[in-house]
Amino acid sequence: MSGAAHAESLRARAHHLLTREESGAAGRALRAGLVLLIVVSVTAAVLKTVPRFGQAHGSAIDLVLVLATLGFAAEYCLRIWIAPENPGARLGAGGAGGERLRYVLSLPGLIDLVAAIPFALAPRIGLNIDWLDIVPIFKLLRHTAAFQFLVEAVYSERRVLGSAAVLMLALLVFQSSLVYYFEREAQPDKYGSIPEAMWWGIVTLTTVGYGDVTPVTPWGKIAGGLTAVMGLCMFAIPVGIIASAFIEAVRRREFVDTWNLVAKVPLFRSLDAARIAAVAGVLRARRAERGERLIRKGDQADSMYFIVSGEVEVDQESAAPKGRLVAGDFFGEIALIAERERTATITALAPCKLLVLHKDDFESFMQSHPDLQQAVREAARRRLQEIGVR
Image 1 (cartoon, helix red, strand yellow):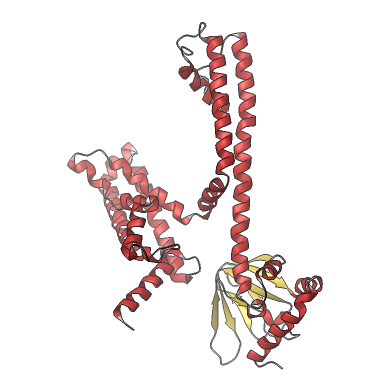
Image 2 (tube, rainbow, N blue to C red):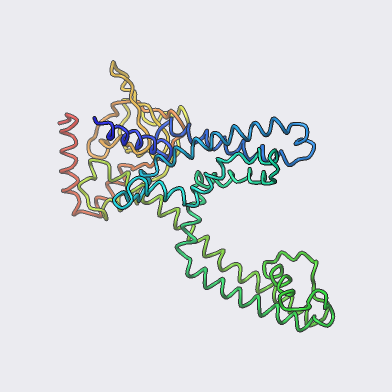
């Protein structure tokens, strides 16, 4: 293997370790360590602002912040190096350097850069910018799937949300203008102009109602009440839109992951995309705790399993060494095509999320799709020949 090929392979492995959920125990430990480093750094930055605590332990807190910054700097350099392996990388135009520049100028890259600068030392050179030590909290968004779903939901419904925003802006201007005309003489200090009245309009439409600015005239109070009611209705629109889109984004991601798992099974590999999606639709979710026995050797086989996350141990209870299966693997598929006992005991080594395909569900699926029976039987025959079963 050439040096360039070896470097590329090493870079790909580093990218997989740092970014992929299915990268195994080492990847999970690395990502957990990065999250812990972020939590420690942000906690130290927050405690530093407590006068008594900051004065008593300021030097120790600064040391923690500087050490955390060194960790972030190492991560930043690593992410620059592995940037050409990012999904969607266009290596043809600018090469690896172009992809690294693209990462550096991206929002995550800028956050990583700021987190890698030791702002805790800024006061010692006369700069009052140590408040930027709180920036690493935004690095948590990279490790939060919910934030990714939220961004996807907002982007998918951006046109509808834009229309709702225009409607709320029009309502804000109208209601603020209305109350201005009712209250300008009674309270010229608070409703002296429409822009000043907009503060009242914002806090009323959002139903916050601080109480620092309130109408006192009868018509102003009526307008204020109507504004509060319309605020409830208007803000329910974007909230409902985002909630529906968020749920749809989660379901879409789960479906894609499930589809990919099913497509890897040799038994289903000959099926088209629509049929694989139909099989994925009859899967049932299951969780297993550490140490839970999923399959016992000798039991009658009645289902197969897909590992979404976690790790299991395969023990054939013989001289053969124990094996391990991780996220993306599957087991028990012979149960769908042959009346056989389990040939190994499988135990969860860590908390696992599984998808289960029961034989009864699979047979019902086959009955409703008779055109698939011949293809599945042929795939089953080849699979049994591969494992030496007659």
